[in-house]
Image 1 (cartoon, rainbow, N blue to C red):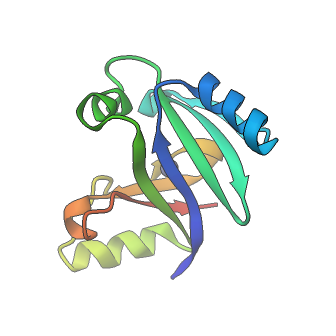
Image 2: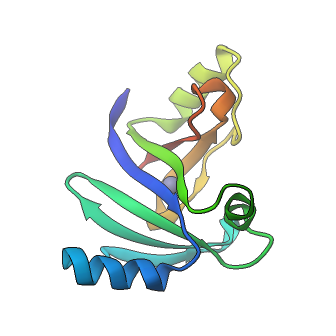
Length: 132
Ligand code: ZN
């Protein structure tokens, strides 16, 4: 059901600072960079083996990431797992009474189908389901 850790989402204040640091220290260039308007975030991805680090910077004060940064500061925001059939996984979780943030998938970075599951149902982790 879970194929791999797709990415780790990390909330940051400045993507430019992250890009400069990763270039300087690790000689790494982003594998993608885009704005996801729906979630009001700019995203920069770095390859880590089969997974990515995804750094998230808010595009404005209304962004959920802006609120997260205000409350908790920079850091680990969510964990994303790749799945074969996101609708099936969502249905199974719903049938078990698990708390879903997205009952139906939406489109995230890299055009993937994604849905978030509430940390209350995932041992304190904000889990993102992701389907290619
Ligand atoms: Zn994500």
